[in-house]
Length: 338
Image 1 (cartoon, rainbow, N blue to C red):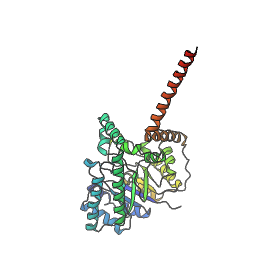
Image 2 (cartoon, helix red, strand yellow):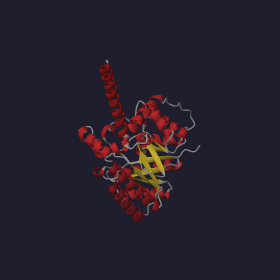
Image 3 (cartoon, one colour):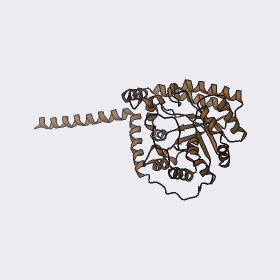
Image 4 (cartoon, rainbow, N blue to C red):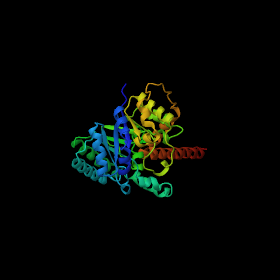
């Protein structure tokens, strides 16, 4: 079975230029038949030059669109106008530099500024989440706007990918938009959705969570091997060791899904990239137990289902109150009869 592997890369221009000054990075990517999902942190000449080199070597490159931090960095429910403008800027820059793209990636996550604020201003961030939760119209508006953006990207001839954390799948399974509205996320139909099943974020249950969500995922994101922007609770989380990384790779491959690794720079820094060239994909891997994760997810589905349908809760409360009043009334009637 052929393993399809893509590396995320999230570096600013100078660091990106330095990374690709090492010709062995190009060689290893070619040997692995790997692609690159490159974070578009800027529209600089340095970034364009690296992409041109990748194009000449026929290494597939996906444009992973990002915004300035003050605009939220990742795409979300509140910045679809900025996201659409960013795509137009990216398109003009690509045409000017004659850059070739395998796809365009939309990274849909919570506002990075809220993630940073959460540690010190938790109450304010929760208030924002509750406000979004009540505003179903804003969610529908954002969903329509992102669908239009995907249609525009398709019309321009590009495949579209999206990158999501796994709770989006639980929201769907529950027939809910609660997680999305609270966190500021949007579920948009694309050609390929990558679930970011980064086991380093979910220790000690990381492998179990990966395997639980892998079954329905279109593509599996594994990590973190190093790098990435620092935000909130994810700061200072230890990176994957080689053994953890190898387990994640084999689990992902066993699922038969395309694999996305975060990140290329982390793999280079830790010496993982050359080891992947001779990696034994066929080695047996013990499947992690998922009973605990499955039970937790089932409970979460029930909660999300109820929160999406508050009238059910209200009807239940009304029914309970009605039953209590009826019992009391019946008791009084019996007393009066005596």
